[in-house]
Length: 272
Image 1 (cartoon, rainbow, N blue to C red):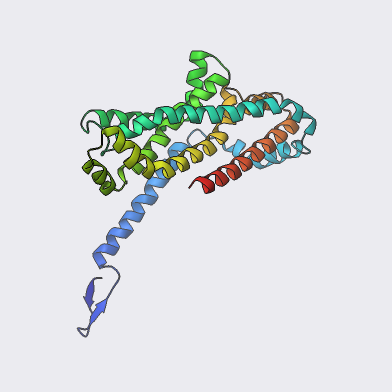
Image 2: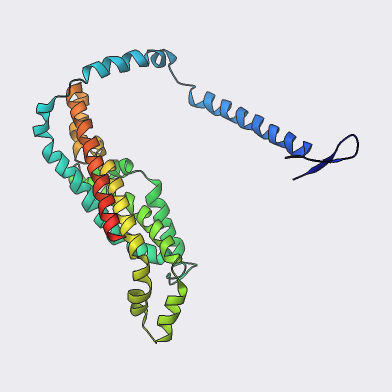
């Protein structure tokens, strides 16, 4: 802490020096100015009449959403099954592609830190940078609407997430175990089987289940862009202003997410 002198020459402890306090206040002023500038840029095209009227519109739509139309449930079972399949198959496909990418990205397992690792890291960043809905839009335009486009969209989005967390787990392994296996004259595959895989298996299981849980949420809305699942029914109900059906779909989505949370937690607890 800085020390200043009082009028009688005694040492006084202060949290910051006068110069540091001035710098801090200038920083706060610049931050406020930046916030105001960004706010003006973002709200430049806002029609404030609609903003002021939003509470009334929200109350009107909310009153139309109750009671839920429970008879609509008969049409949701198959889309719900599609949604679960999109999340599950997309996650499995992502795991198949993400595992080799993770090993190529980890410093202690990549064959080349100058050439191969940057390519693997680029794949991870590219996958994580594009939202699943964007992948869905692109794939629906390329291969057409349907569940298959949703599966591929979930897989492409999940590769970066799984590979990033997995390669970090690979880099954090205990190298002394690898050295001990090397001392026995083990091959590269034996080092992988007996030295690396046992150490990263708990992390791998947790990462996969966590991503599957996230994909359940993302797959519920992929239908909004034509990629199958509950999102198709949600979009159709909103288009015809069937708000009772929308409420039923929301309840189904919430229940699905809660069940996936419970299943994910139970499986992680049993495996890790």
